[in-house]
Image (cartoon, rainbow, N blue to C red):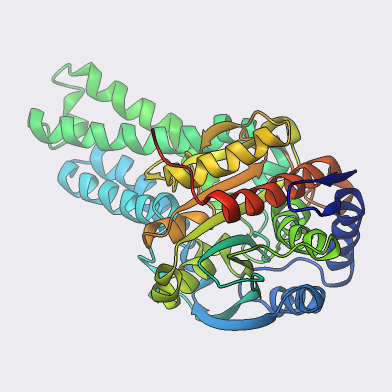
Length: 419
């Protein structure tokens, strides 16, 4: 499909979509899975840099340090604390059991839900990288738009592979957390009711204490299964999540270059970040390192993350497990651009997880996320099924079209304002 806009360019979206699919396939076939901070992650970024050089004014690769297993490495500890608390409580130590429950929750909340670098120092260091390409406007640079996708791919989630995303969530992940909550409540009841020795509750006819313990035991297998939530060695192809996001950014810049279109006052920056799957570590490192530069002129950041399920294409209103509100102007910029392209996009929230845009929003830079991914999630999510054969080019094509319009609208009008 070829489109034109008021900037006078004719953009060949279809050929750039074909280009994106071919390059994603090449990376998956010839470089392979790209765990955070791995040589393969860097090799893929160098591969993409060669494609960005002819269509940008400058490319660079910056390194940063991370502890990739910190993000999910707490799982065995949390499982041991939760399961142990169930039995410690029964044998008359509810206060100790309650403390164990709190210790189980802390890394779960801070690392997995809030993406804090809480326990990272406990794990080995690696070096990861961010690839950055910059395209200057034809006039004075007065503002900037950043498109960021991530080059790494996640360690495989075997339970998602076995059951599918939604079933894994409902049959394993949710029950495991519910079991920990029940054990915590059981501990508190034992403390406040004065029944420190739960075994004695049988003789005192406190059947509901016994019931709580039995229910807690029912959930123990679900909690134990959480240890197998993630592989610690095998990474996935990551074709849709998130080489598709990287190539939406690259394809947007390439289509504009081929159409001979330079923005009037807006610098375009494309970032292929590293180690997003290790807790947004690349985006966090970049946003912290470049905070002053990003705030010296008006800057908006669009997080591009997984373009496969066109029917679920959406702009992210909330991020970081629902705790972070994205900028009003940023999210309406993308929504309005999509409307100009004939797409009525919904605002959605990431209730568990985050995208790279959250790292920039946390630094006070107007940001939003943009994706086309089944929120269930789908069975390809973080599994070996996320391969080139499972790509859906129509979602990538729509995203490139929308991002071209987003860049042009931002150049002409800036961010939308509330009435």
